[in-house]
Image 1 (cartoon, rainbow, N blue to C red):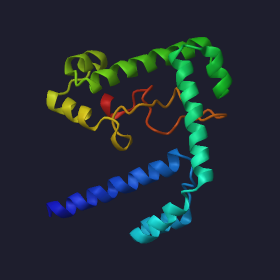
Image 2 (cartoon, rainbow, N blue to C red; image 1 turned 135 degrees about the vertical axis):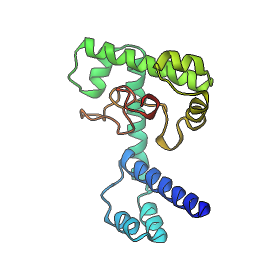
Image 3 (cartoon, one colour; image 1 turned 120 degrees about the vertical axis):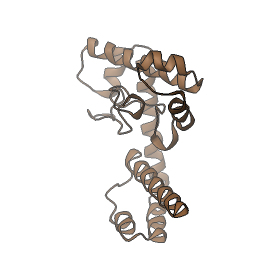
Length: 180
């Protein structure tokens, strides 16, 4: 039974990762062929449908969004309000931006504690009441499959020209398993 459970868990993780990739990187998440293949449990059809989305055009769109997000991240890290507004088109005031920068800096400190496997600093920064074993699991899986703290943030990084977040977990708002 354990082997079946592991296979099922791997399948679910694969589907979540694939769905997240399709959604996060702008490919058509409404692709009927992908949805039908998943609903039918047909791996070969799913693989074919996913591969059909792998094009130079999609790659270039992903690259463009990545570069735009990097510029936004750099503006936040430099506490550059004007550049942030210019890049995102968001309608926030300087106080809101300052709060966002503070949250971003807090998240980076927490990431540093996780990367360094520094349990004490993590507890101090987050105020969480978890065991060292639970922290070790967070540190071990940090950034895998979009889980953990990752390296991004949502509320700080809207899609260019919209007011939406990146859709990769709301690290700025602390709606992430590291804060549950």
